[in-house]
Length: 312
Image 1: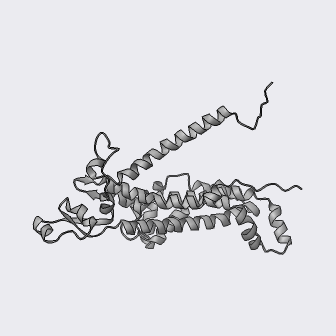
Image 2: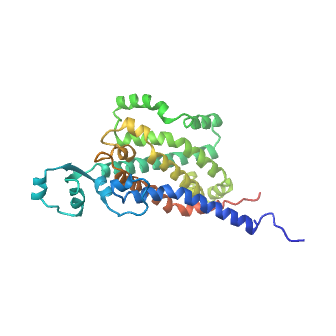
Image 3: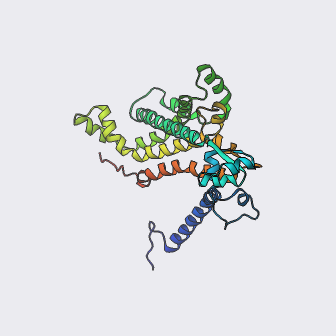
């Protein structure tokens, strides 16, 4: 009779699982890879049918993304030769670069608003989750349900009241207004996720720290937070993804000063229509901060929850 383990999967099961994971990874990466290579195509190659996999790469999409251009007469072009490689690219359409585009400003707005709201959501969510986990709060279940209920309706359902309120308070098209709004939307997710992680941390750890002379805040800061690092990292990533990709509020509440990249990228217009290489270039650059942020926190995400148990 052959030995059988209820915990160790068979080689066949491992092979099937590995095949499924690889297949899923390839399927999910194809759209991202296509966006990336489209950023290096010419407008004609980007809309070619059948789609071109082999093409002459160009930086035209990135030049169009970061610059504004205007058409000039042939006499003007002959009298003013191109000064750099970017000028040479736009000259093929009888155009000249007149200045930078607004993509850099919109991208910076996304960084400020996205990371600012993520920090506030995680900071306030951690404090609230710790209070719900460790202290006896009257009507705690009702309060937690109320916090969760703020995520039950689509954000666009409350967009008009928020627009009117922000107009009266002077928060429309401001970084502070968008940070506060995204924080309010994300904090419910942060509280519920972090409460689950903090509940798994044995209270005995804090009690031992209090006996050693720590204050409640010192016990929270030096004992609970390091143990909850995995949960904090996961929560931060989820909060950043929402704030980074949010479109409806950004369209309705911003127009110039605090407009983020998502509403701006679709407005990139090229010659005769939408400049798909420029849109793809903008989408590629827009992916980078979230990707880098996730990679930096991968140690906490991949680390298992090793809270352990305390025998009584």
